[in-house]
Length: 336
Image (cartoon, one colour):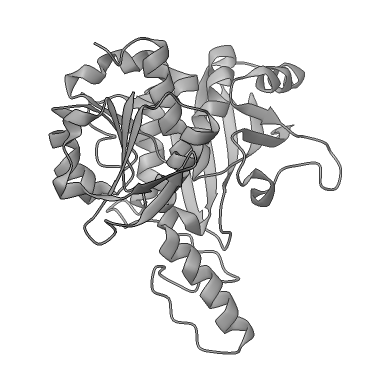
């Protein structure tokens, strides 16, 4: 099977390459694509050196699946054109709210892939929404979720390589006693926390918080109420989420831990002792979504608290995209 990756030189694009190789995905020919500025770069895949191709010069009829990892502006212009010739799996936010385009997290709603032929595009979900719905789907099936209150603590890699570079440079400037000037963040990110991701809406929420609301409803259940606060923190990789979940009925905490331990993509590490939980550092470069601090909320009936962590570049982006492709193949939808 021939595969293309648009945005192959970026953080997520390079992770898609890594995941395809680690999973031994069935590839006959791999085409690595980027802007004219990055065209000509050399990237290795399975002991073979590939030359990055200029997006404007590529013919998408050469491939069966094209992964887009180049942001909304590129997706808006190029994904519909590519979708006339191939299946597009897009990592940007651009198509997520389109009712004719499935928004898919395979462990949760792979059945929705059957609708992708409407526009030949499949949207990958937000990097915080993916781990949240992976964890909450089995609990919703069991107890029926009424309300979610989420606080996300998102790493700087969510901004891209520029965000990671700025955290490192600001840290260096801090210890050298130099004045810190923020370029990719609204305030200093080193040794700080910024309760603001994406632009503000009229209701006081940010677009990132609105994405949580809209995407959880589209993927999991439109009847679920959800509110969130999204915070950027000085961590290079991995997003963390503190989640309070209210069910419509009483629950058994032991059953919740048991179900999550067996659920696809989930790994429970929840020991009630020093260090008996997962932090962003441990989640980096891991495929699993980790769950810790599972406990009863004594202030509200039928409610629990959870701590969720995952690598936002992997399960929050690249890994989920590749798993969508695997689901297409498993359901034999890629040849229709």
